[in-house]
Length: 76
Image: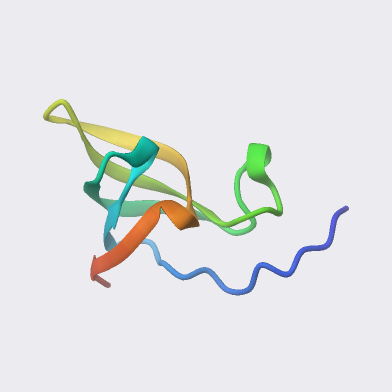
């Protein structure tokens, strides 16, 4: 098992955030927080599943890296 020193997660479930999946600025709510990231990025960064919009429809953005989150708009 690989040891990492990622520190605490910056965001929490329920936070309303501005984020940029593939460089496209969006607003959404964090639904899942993956400490240490998903399998494809395990140990490199924390990741989040964020409910946002795509073409006017609800869309769950899976495994969004912490670096893609620009700011918290509201926090629970």
